Amino acid sequence: MKKAFVSFTTIFALALIAAASPKAGDSAPGFTATDSSGKTHNLSDFKGKFVVLEWTNSGCPFTVKHYASGNMQKLQKEWTAKGVVWLTVLSSAPGKQGYKTAAEENSYLKDSNASPTAVLMDPKGDLGHLYGAKTTPHMFVIDPSGKVIYAGAIDDKPTTDQEDITGAKNYLNAALGEALAGKPVTTANTQPYGCSVKYAE
Image 1 (cartoon, one colour):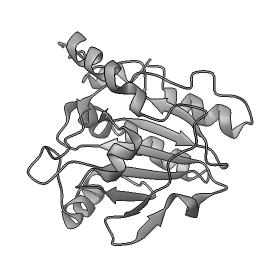
Image 2: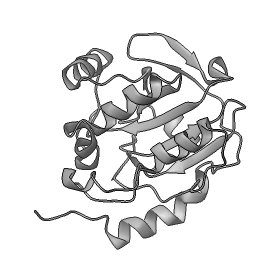
Image 3: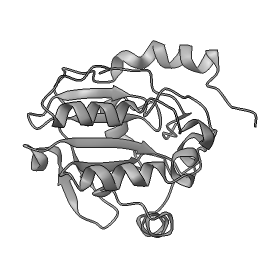
Image 4: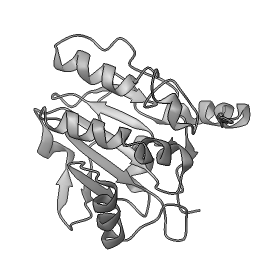
């Protein structure tokens, strides 16, 4: 099966703007956002807990890789069961790939058996720009004190091939595992890969 890799041009472009994203050791930018059920969430609500931010786009083949395989849902279930708050963020603008209304997103969550703590609806891209989210997926882990302890790719296989999930080094899993065990995160910053976040122009 032919594998789709992130192009050199894409990697270069992402590298040029990567500085806009908070890195490990930075304070996580505070935010207020509404989820797909109409509930308002503030990052400060989750002080004292680990928080995952996952940028998503159901039309992106890199995102599809992790959802069609069940990999993302497995991660959501595993870590929320351990008390981690998992916030999926949908920053696709109206008319752009991956955009969904709240009702459409809730239907997608049910059909795909996804179980994040909440899906934050960000059609204007405010939260995405605040975090400098570049790709789908783009992952951040925030510790109980409000510091970013991981930022970047979900794993080390920047392809759309589901077969590559097995054997991949899952950076998110590693970061959460180390952090919850009271250890420093070994790999704290990586280059995110995937489709560009479909912000409004």
